[in-house]
Structure formats: C-alpha cells, structure tokens
Length: 185
Length: 386
Image (cartoon, chains in turn blue, orange):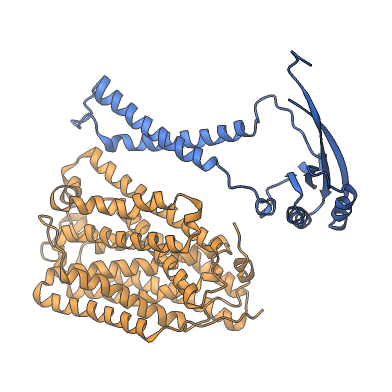
C-alpha cells in the first residue's frame, strides 16, 4: 500500500481475565509473571498495594523529571529576580543591597515547587499520551467499579490459551476471554 | 499471639566504652568548673537541652503515632520509649543549671524592667521550670508505663488510654515548650527576642530524636532484638521523616532569619550579627550544611531511604548538626562572640552526653520486651509495607 500512511502489521492477541478481589488479582499477577507470561497491563478500580511488585514494574522515572525541573525552576527564578531587581531596574528597598538573596528565597522556593509539580503532571500525561480528546479504553466496564482485570499478551507461539484460561479460572477468575487488536503503523 | 524475641545482649566492651564516655563527660564538667566555669556551665546547659530534646522528641514521636492511630512504628516503639529514660536526668541537669549555674543568665544580676522583669523573675523562672519538667516527666512516665503494662495484660483499653494521654501531652507540650526555650536558652540574651524561637527548638529537637531513633533501631537490628522486626519499609518511613523534618528545620530557621533580616531592627539583628559575621561565620554556615543541605540531597533518592547504612551515616551527620545548632545558640551569648571557643571541656561533654544517653537507653530498653508484644496493632506493623 505505497503512499498510504498506515500499514497492516498483524493481530495482537490478548487474554483478559477478570477477578473480583484484590487478593486474587495479586496472586494471579504474581503467578502469571512467574510462569513467564507477558503481562500487558492490570486494571483495578483503585491503587492496589504490592501490584507494582507483582507486575515487576520498573521504578517510575517521573522523580527525575520532578528533580530536574525543580532545580531548573529554582535556578531560573534566582536569575530572574536578580535580573529584575538588581540588573535591569535596580530598586532600593529599605536600603538593602540590590541583590539581596534572602529576599529571593521565598519566591524561589514557590517557583521551584510550581515547576516541579506542574512538570511532573505534564510529563505523566505526555508519557501516557493522556491528551485532551483521548477516549477511554476500558478493558472491562467493571474495572471502574468492583472488578480487577489482568491482561496477558499472547506473544509466544507456544502460548496455550486453554491452559492459561483454566489456570486463571482456578485462581478465581469470573471470566476469561480473548481480545484481538489490529495492529497498524 | 506470642513472639519469641531476643533481649539485647550488650558486649562488656561496649558497655565499658559507654561508661568511660560518661565518665569523661562528667570529669570535663567538674574540672571545667574549676578552670573555665563559664564554658563548663555553657556546655552543661548545651548538653542538657540537647538530651532533653532527645527525650521529648521521642515522646512526641510516640504521641503522634498514638493520636494518628498509625500502626507502622508500633514494632519499633520500644526504641523511643527507652529514649524517654533520659528525661529525668536532663530535667535534673536543667534545674541544676538554673540553681547552681545561674551566673550564665545576665538577668539574675541585672534585673530587667517592666513585663520582662516579671517574666524573668528568678523564682518565677525556677517555678515554671519545675512545673514544665514535672508535667513532661509525669506524662512520659504514664504513657511508657501503660505501653509496658499492656505487654502483661494484653488489654486493648490501654491503647485507648494512651491515645488520650498522648493528645494531652501534645497540647501540654505545645503550650509549655516554647516558654521553656525562652526561659532556658533565649534569656541568655535577655535584650533579644524572637517569636519563632520555640518552634525552632521543637523542629531541631524532633529532628535529633528521629536521627537518634534511626541509628538505635538499625543498631538493635544488628544486635538482635529487632532482627526480623525492623524492615526496609520501616526504615523508608523513618527516612522520609528525617528528610521532611530536616527540611522543616531549615524552613523554620529561614522563617526566623528572614523576618529579622527584613525588618532590620537594631535590637533584633544583634543575635544574628554575632553569629553570622566574624569568627562564628563558618560555624553558622556549617550548621545549615550539616543539618539540612547535605541530608536533603543525600536523602532524595528512594534507595537511600531504604538503606540502613546510608540512613545511619546521615543520622550521625544530623546529630553533629544538632550539637552545632545548640552550640551556636548558646556559646556566642555566654562565652562571647569574638572568637569560636572550642576545647577540651566542650569536646569532653559532647562525647560524654552520648555515653550517658546510651547507658540509660540500654538499661531502659532491657527492662521491657524489645517489642510491644501485646499491642493490637503489632501484627499490622510487622507486615507494614509502603
């Protein structure tokens, strides 16, 4: 399909298992990881303690954004205050020196917090592509209510759907179904 | 539920070391009284204010935990409880300073006038000290005793009773501690005043107690009693508190400094001029670096807050900062701000205080089960995770 923007690559197959308790989803996730299955994602109605460990997620890189932008914000603000009150338009306040560092500290602190906080939120939204207009894709309607969904990607040719499904049902899954997503570039 | 827990077995060598340190401290004080009484009393006051802060900070920690209904620190609560053992000793030291070392305070010879004269009336100051110390000692005793009684009776009502007592202590502490700091330390410069002084002392005392608690908890984990009890999760929380209160200390420090710097009133700036300009300048800067700047950047990453080795190092640095802070608050007022006075008397008492503290801590810790075995929240605390 020369000239076209999208190219058909192939299907991605997922297995979606729905659980009704926190303990079950933790056990099933740990079990899936230990058996070498590819965990695409886990959907829960609230943050489940220990799920990051069960999924073997990497530590978040957001703190680095927070640290770097916090430092940048603080640095920028010190420079800006120096520039406004000592360089571009020197102002005599109570006979203090123009470049009075103690007077700059509170605002520098506030701007550091502002930069660090906003940039962390922005980096999270951009990193997850959570931009305005994005439509929610729910693995299962229940995950906003009382259900916990574990999504396994069938990456391996030796993946045995029936065996894995049976295993999940054994571990308390109320439903296990397969989803196919058409992959395009 | 019963748990097998190992009691602390202190090697004789360590015990002898603590004893010798305490003896060195005591000898420095006695000999100092003969050769340099002003320095000896200043150092004695410094040490006792520091030790009192350790005990009160530990009691505050216990009280916060009870009032919030927090479970995470229940398993290590015997550490701050044993730290409270220093309180009677430090209280005695403070009273002794007020009685025998009153020459430190200029207002005992040159009476202040007006309202300040009423507040700084000698018998009134001593009476206040007795009331404050009495209240703190009584509440510390009541809270620690109830916690220990629970070991034997497994009575959950004791937790509720301690929750009420903790709330009482927090209110009493809030109303009395600032006055105590005004009386015992700020009045060394009777012409100077700062309304931030009490909260400044609180931030330092609580930070120091957290640092000491972290070191002691890690030590007790190695020594046996807290093995399989203290986990990375508990350390992580202690690390977060160290980080937070180190920053809180700096925040309060700056809040006091900036207002005085901005207003620039002659009667207020003297206190800081004596410390930041001239000979004391480097100590002034070192205090900030050691208590906040270095701990702040070191404690930022998550793995550091979960590493016992790193936490102990940072805590030791903070404890050095605590000494520097009190040194800066007391010495320029009493011994003089022209030059930095540091020598054998200061060093002797600075190493003697930890020696005495450890002797009392070990005795108190060994007199009860190493963990509160019957606390209803113990199980939750042992399985605490972030």
